[in-house]
Image 1 (tube, rainbow, N blue to C red):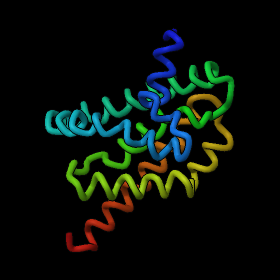
Image 2 (cartoon, rainbow, N blue to C red):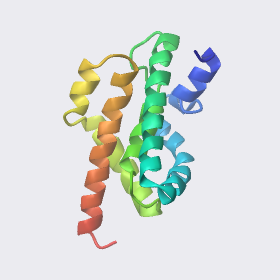
Image 3 (cartoon, rainbow, N blue to C red):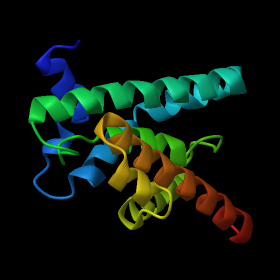
Image 4 (cartoon, rainbow, N blue to C red):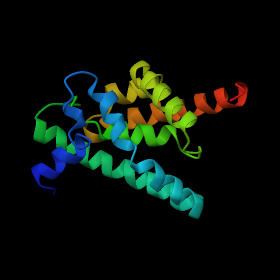
Length: 156
């Protein structure tokens, strides 16, 4: 489908997935250039915003699936496109400002590590790119909800 180089570049978040420690944390940073794009799309249409997010998730699943074959290992630490999709989920329908970007980052990383249900089930039971990506999307949605609660409660 894609060349090996393209798969490695995209799946590793422009090679951030090769970080020797905390590759998922570094890989999350690969989403930062997408945030203003998603914010601009959100101002055009909520439906287009969700469709674009769904397209990102679908593309991430296909790329992660192919990357597992390229790297010859399941859910390789080098694959961080799942963190990109999860972090974008953590910011869905939230303003892109310093407070939300940082809050979403830390909460997403927390929920990605904790993997509350159904993220842990997805991670354990689904195979291929869907298993790699969807647990992070759910972690991102949990982070999104937690951030909304915190923003409503804390006077920022």
